[in-house]
Image 1 (cartoon, rainbow, N blue to C red):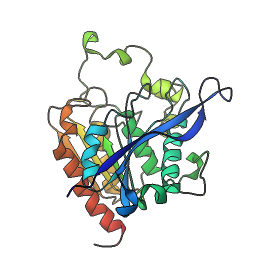
Image 2 (image 1 turned 120 degrees about the vertical axis):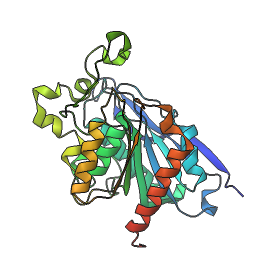
Image 3 (image 1 turned 120 degrees about the horizontal axis):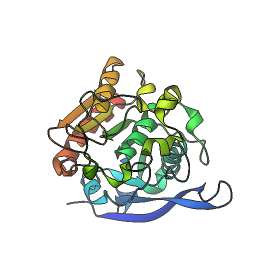
Image 4 (image 1 turned 90 degrees about the vertical axis):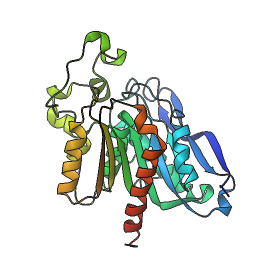
Length: 291
């Protein structure tokens, strides 16, 4: 018999400066999919999901239908908000994600979460933040705010077509006709909006906001997926990320989808969710010393 599930919507996990810094505040919220009676189910691994949107917009409920695949297979799922680039520059967004992880760990007993099995994942800009949360596991300088007695460490990362570097140049970047260019790319660069400067003007500083700069042998395992025809975030980003992980002997699985563009619907089929969960089953067992 399938476990009955429930959606807890609009849970506040932090309050952050929003209008003018320290003049007004807003709540950051999350939606959580849990068993209807979590106290009867035992502890579940948790997937923290981060929606993309060029760090300029996001909708935390956008992927909940697809994320139900994980909830039905025994995961709890939290889809979380973070501040947009018109509110603060990086690393504020990463700090928000780590706040969410610490909040969930602090309330693990209430929500029936296994605090030793937390996975972070996301797509596009959300994948950048998920990857950054993973590769900065041991970097306490990004932990700000409440629940600092809890760690923001994660045990695995799901990276859907995220930027791994802001200075990497695509080898065969296709020419984009202006008429085909998405509206959000016609103004200032979304990366410049995130960082507060163009990466080319300070590449060394830009590298401190990129996952590729932090990979080391203690980096958690990665599941990576990218489309070969992505004109927004070229696939070279994931190629470079996977290569760096392999050099550091970090478990990684990299799926390329031939002909797929950015945010292609083929990423959001049950088949992809099953591949991710098969990967997570292996790496979480290894984390527990069961293999």
